[in-house]
Length: 585
Image (cartoon, rainbow, N blue to C red; front, side, top):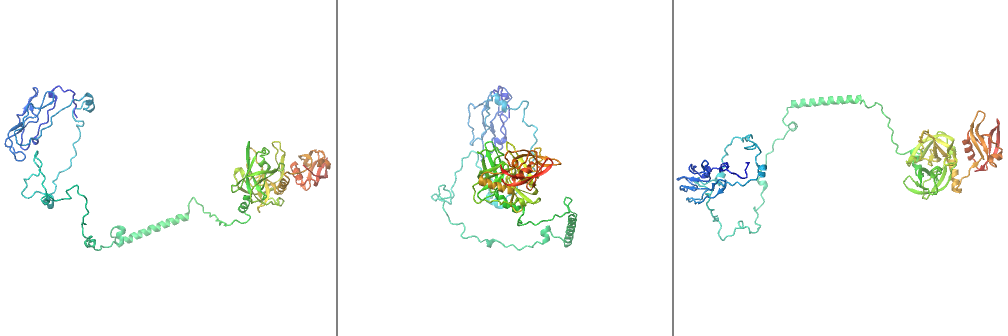
């Protein structure tokens, strides 16, 4: 790219137009040294476009030119193209060759020159040190064409001087029709307006493939060694190869046997006994009992405006009666008449329950649901239990419904005192102690024996304190005999009556007397009428030994109101036996 000035002022700065070469002048032409032009006093230079044809030169087409000089446009001082003043046609009888195009440089503004011009300090090409192009190699002549192509497309013999190209400037020759076609004939191949016509098939019959196909002779078959190894192998080499393979297999087998015999360092040589899986659970197994008991156990949800709680219950009657704990359905006395009680069965069925009645003194309650053909649990005889008998607890501890735990009877006739909060009287009952896991939510659920009979209602646990309210293996259940008796009274009468001694007592422990000491007696009560006085220590009631106040309470409630029982007491160091007729509370 060249850097241009917008207004060139000296003609000397304008490069001279390219000089015509010998090729431009035609065959045999030579430059004319006299054809020059003086530009504004500068050194004479050859006049561009001027061409001299010497006499006797042979022109294309064999014509003889005359001596003539063609004058081309001359560059003036401003390097502008000006036509010659008096152009004269050349005095030759052939068309003159076109000369170089006149040089016309338009004005260039500085902004374009700054963008497209050479960078500062660069006078020549942008890459003057560019390496020369890589040589393409030695040029060789092409081989002569085949004789068939030469005879078809080459010049006829003797016509080597014939030139197929027309001379420059000669008029185009008129096309000649093929004499094969007449002027009035119709050639559909040469008429673009001719329509398509379906012609006859190219072949009269289908080619016979079998005729032109030569059958190949069968070749030799490859042997097994050639297939496996790609070449023929000597029998000796095959034998050696087989022997090596046998040795490798023997060594590998020996190593595997040693490793297997030695054993893995991470495994033990001890073989665990494999127990056959039983297809049927034997009768009386935990799974068998749980399968029969679980449909009769429900989860109880109590909701009121100020909160709610959950517990468990057990169906005891086909009419829909459910036995549970008093503290479950009343939220330990906090629930009101607007509390909503809902039961959830093991199959997910939900039913709203109605409160039938409660017994706060023994922590028992009865509710009723409207269901058809429910599964009920039969009462067992809690008096037949022995310490060590297997028992199963079912319920919803901590909201985990349908939970089964197993244990044994740890103790019998264990007096339990619970509650007494919110102005309520303490709850006292003669409990069955068990190590079956019982937690919050198990309350009201059944405790069954090895036959699946109901022997207790889970009610309380003993915790280790320090905020730990979980099971520590000390759970307590209300005996089924007491639960059955109280539930029948609630269903029949809607309330419960307990036997009453008519005296307030406290536990004492001394070398001379141990039991329940009378603090005061109720005027007109059973104790007052029997002659029991303040300060007496009751040591036995009926057949039950009394060692503290709780045992006296459960001993009295184990009898019916109006029943007369013997009471053994200590008074001023003497032991007395008094007959007492119990009253109702």
